[in-house]
Image (cartoon, rainbow, N blue to C red; front, side, top):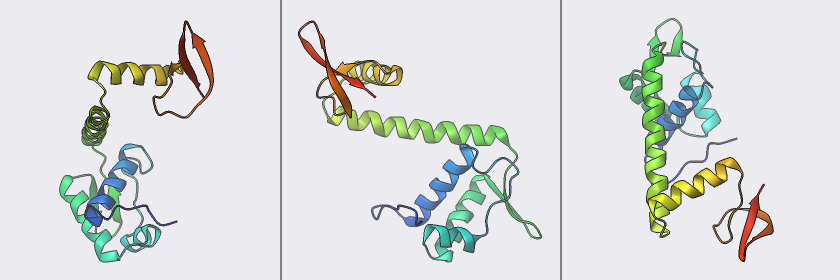
Length: 146
């Protein structure tokens, strides 16, 4: 199935980010062999030249290494992988907080909402989550999160 790519950003950058995520999540472990450019381009439904550009970007970052006789593999530098994982996480959190501010939430409210959702607690109705039956908590309507 083709990768879901956004037309608002360069395709090669999205491909590089997707492969970064696969590396930091362990899908491609440290030292592990990567599929060929052609194989991944087919899976992502993109031109092999675009995938090659994404691979070149990942090589520049040090996340992947090219070996002439053995193709490409993920770096064995687990510290680099950890730093990239933290960088990606920070960016996701930054975007999330920015969007929540656009919705009118204050930082404390966002943190509280996240904690409640993470812990599976009831949250105030109208928070936009997918919830099931309401629970009455002293006059306030709450929804249980599944």
